[in-house]
Length: 447
Image 1 (cartoon, one colour):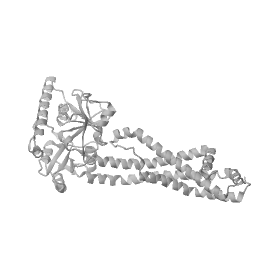
Image 2 (tube, one colour):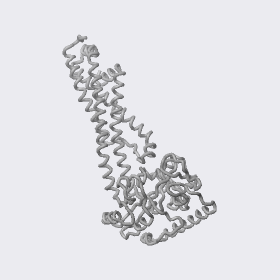
Image 3 (spheres, helix red, strand yellow):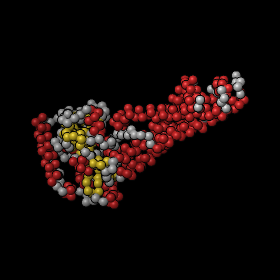
Image 4 (cartoon, helix red, strand yellow):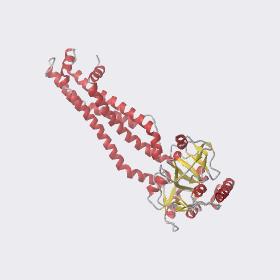
């Protein structure tokens, strides 16, 4: 009989101990692969969320905080910027386009983003990929809402379904704008970015649902006739502006002043695209030194690198801990093999009587180590992928991170190979002791 089947039967004969060792190795491998998978997928997801944007502008705060809440929908803004400041930035001759962003409301845990037609026209993700509608159309009426692919999938929404927004960004809200229901006018195609978990409405809509609010609390509501008149007036102005903007040439957009009934007083942030990337630092300095109010302009790529450097120490600590867990699993396997040597002396004597040489005993012990590590590594990888498959929607909704379930990478295979090689090295000690015992015991095992 060859060594591998013999080693397999020997492990089955000690199935309880072998199973516990197998599980400990599987857990350690799943932890190590999981930490690396989450790290790489988080970086990939963050990097692909925004492209083609030169600056992100918001109220004076930390650069990373501004990036997180304006682009990745993580956290909340501490302040806003006035509409007048936004228009000044938009009127800058070096600016090609701007996208206003207004955050602060939600629907069943999903963020609501107030913006305008520039968002659909200029927002890019991945490799400068533009947003596409899977069905329906971009908002035209003031109470239209365009939802992301994940929102549509998770909530089962389709065209013309009602949507009631809630004040605040928490999953549970006690203040709903149920006097101003929206309807789904379009569903965006999947992007693998936080756009999928976002509900998009017009800036006028955001202003409308908050027109009877003061300092974060609801003021006495106007009469239904007055409200209906404001809605109809705003819808007319929004449709007129939409038709007129389609007729304008791209270079005339900033020269046309947008005067409508529900002009926003402030916004959360703005995305800025420049005519020439060579002027990025110049425009950034102009915005940061703007005297109208304290503003902050950040370069997305630079801020992302700051974020990675900030969490780099945490990443290394997690990888170190995961590696130590794998080492602990291999040490557990070593302990199991060593403690079983005395119990297996009779087994070794029988093998010697059947013609096995000491080198065969040595190879048998090494083979058992490799089989345990190999089976544990494969089990750990399988469990990890099943967990990622099950938790992918939850991670996407909670953190906006899309985890791609793909074939194992070269790095993953390298980790599995390293674990098996580690088991081979660890197995040398029990193999050597078994070899020495077989030499000294011969055909008569000592008890």
